[in-house]
Amino acid sequence: MKKTIFLSAMFLGSLVFAQQTHVVGGDRDAHGCIGSAGYTYSQIKKDCVRTFEQKIKLTEVSPKGSSTSMAAVIFSKDMKKAEVFVKDADSGSIILTRAGGKAKAWKKDGYVLVPFKKNGYQLKKDNIVIYQ
Image 1 (cartoon, rainbow, N blue to C red):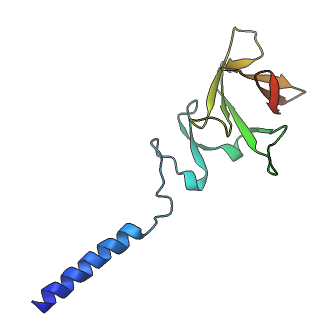
Image 2: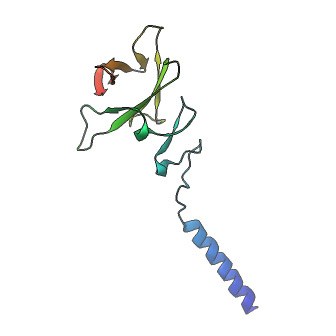
């Protein structure tokens, strides 16, 4: 009887400990991306990406506070869509669409992405430059 009670207590104790243990990388989102490893889901690539590793990165123009945030841009293969990862996006990113074949701007909900200087881009919100 004492042996059964002791083993039951050991089993229950191990269950409590297992529930409190934090598993590193166990924070997968609905798409399977591990946020603690810096991954977020890209709607254009249909895969997990690290925004800080993307080729096109923009810097906040007028940061609020002491830290400057970054934005990343991923284009679709046909360049008709641009996915912009900004801190203000509820879903993590915003998909901008280029209007017409020769248009040089991608737009959605007051956001506009335009080429800037030789190889850069500017992101505007309500006609105010927020990243470049």
